[in-house]
Image 1 (cartoon, rainbow, N blue to C red):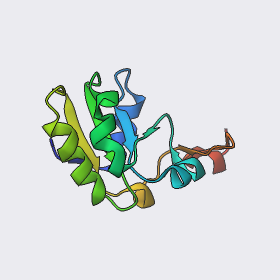
Image 2 (tube, rainbow, N blue to C red):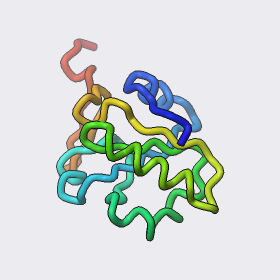
Image 3 (tube, rainbow, N blue to C red):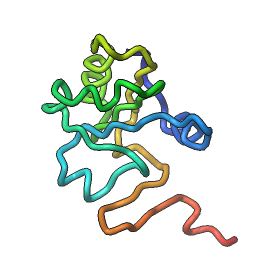
Length: 117
């Protein structure tokens, strides 16, 4: 694991052309309710069997509700023999994330929605 990433740093990275792969390790129901835009869902218990889904990524950020289980997920990905990219855990977890999110019904939220154009 390469460390933890703060919410504002992740937002900036998502604005880059080489944005990281966001791996949300919560259960599918919570993931469908709300998630960071363009993230993928691999529940923590299934990560060992599905870690190959992230093997081609150069930069992975793991996400959980509070930033604790995602550290374990980041370490697991780092230990995968076929992975040689950067792996970070979102330190604040999804509960501390202020960036844009989306839900299964297609609704997106951003901080700028309350601002005037």
